[in-house]
Length: 301
Length: 245
Image (cartoon, rainbow over all chains, first blue to last red):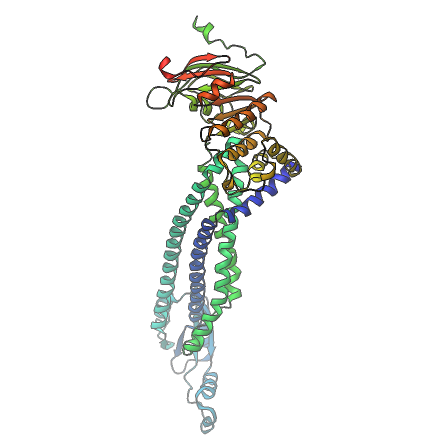
């Protein structure tokens, strides 16, 4: 038991000491992982924010249905129930003529509204339809327009709808592409740095094997070193992005204040709930597999 | 007749290294070892001499189980090296000490750490390491230099560190591959005196060398090899020139 504990601590100690023994190798490995995870973190933040903006915008999109003169409230409500059953519809709101006028008065007229004795928007009772998926808007519009006995007009935001669904696809494509490229680059760079590190220590591995080292004894310090490099390499970009993120958000919202209504940024804590485990896992994973795989290749002494 | 020849010879209990008709072939060229039989007893001091290409290095590598024999049987300390499992190799090697011509020390560690490295590998507890390492450093005459960096040492001192590292695990056999090859005559003699002392304490020593003076002065068993074959094996032998064969 004493032996196992003693060897365990020696192995961990050697892992830590390896970090300082080949400083340039260590720095290069940490820098490589940190650079990859910095890019990953940056794109992740952008993508998460973008899809949040798109989602918020999508939720705001609605199709508005106006009805023919003489349509009763009962008829409209029955139609509302019918629309509500469709899968692409998330919510249907009934706006009565009175409510439409009240809202118009407060939004645009203010005090000047006092001059009106009758509701000038008598025929403006309408249904506002919110969608679950913007790309299905055309088929809903066709359906609504087919009810010619009731429906006078269907208003929709054609440009916004198509732009948003297109943007959603584009963002998904770009993010997958970028992540794939980053993975290839990081695998290439890390396998290079690990190979250099191994060649530096090839004689040490050979001697250890001659003396009677078990595979575990040879492998463990390198693997621990790899994990430590992975942890450090993932923490650095997380710290940098944490401070950079709020700076960039402040910059955009102050310099492009027109956009600030449209763009709602997520708090950094929200992004970090998933970015921290993702980054640390990738960092540790690259460090672990990079060193374990490369050391395994050099054990045949 | 064939059956009788194949029948395994019983290894005497005082025999520590046994080679029976060992051949080692590489993919191209003539075999590096060609039907070599060799028996070394516990506590012997054996020189192996011969020109480059005679098969000395292959022999050492076979004894370390770095290579396996193409034909024949090798038994070292009761381990049959033809059939030893990969998992058992570390345990087997812990009974061997090895020193090389180029020392093969870890240049980024000091004298003490280089010797302690061998003890950590065989999983000695820290308290024992702290006791054993200074003792062995005193034996090789480096007690005062345990904190020195390897790069600050002379060639002779570096070989002493290598010897201490080989001996600290108390091996039964010490394999020395041209240990004086990089040293001047005086330093070489100091190393030889150390080896002789280690041998007197019971460790079997197999030493590959080119050094005629040392071989002739030591009066030990000399095995001469040429082109993968043992051409001479003499108790209290002398260095034999290649032309004589």
